[in-house]
Amino acid sequence: MRAALFVTCINDALYPSAAVATVKLLERLGVRVAFPAGQTCCGQPQFNTGYRTATEPLVRRMIDAFDDAEYVVTPSGSCAAMVRDNYPRIAARAFTGGRGSDLEKDARSLAARTWELTEFLTDVLGVVDVGAHFPHTVTYHPSCHGLRMLGLGERPRRLLERVDGLRLTDLPGAEECCGFGGTFAVKNSDVSAAMGHDKITNALSTGADVLCGGDNSCLMHLEGMLRRQGAPLRPLHLAEILASTVDDPWSP
Image: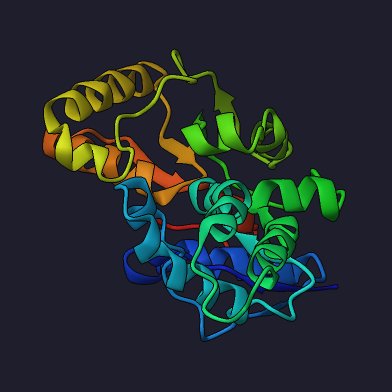
């Protein structure tokens, strides 16, 4: 099986270890991973801020970049939701520029082929035990897009529960937003910080070593608050936990 990695901006620029872990994990499971070099931002920041027409060229670029991919896999629930939920609607209203109705058809095609990492593992590959080893106590934060737009449900937890050595603790208020929300954190910083404070207070109460999530944007928001407090809790992308093995362990 072949799959194309949709790396996302934040992983490419700030958290490349999550992208590397995704590739290592998929290849360990027998997937041949390609990286289309033409990919750029999916347009989520522009679209969420109200600039729909400025998002259209990025939709076209993503469609072209992943045109021949059977599966498109991304370690980001928010970016997967952008492609799956918003691309067809953006394309339906777009100035076609000579492409006619093909743009909407192509957007729907890409949406149907795009998978968040945990749903690709469980729904496409049909695996829950990925052979990981992670001897640490972990609490899991389900980010809003994965929880509400993609409906990931228990998929991430089922994967974590099968990791050798991992002790999974329940996060109080797990389904509450962490307060990041992209540009929401900039435009409504006081509210965002208050929501983030509640989230890390709950996370610290679990006694976990690691705060795990499927979106590095949310983890970045929480990591900044944890660092300013000097808290020992370490935010870490789910892919890095699942990629960790006895022979190739994760190290802080």
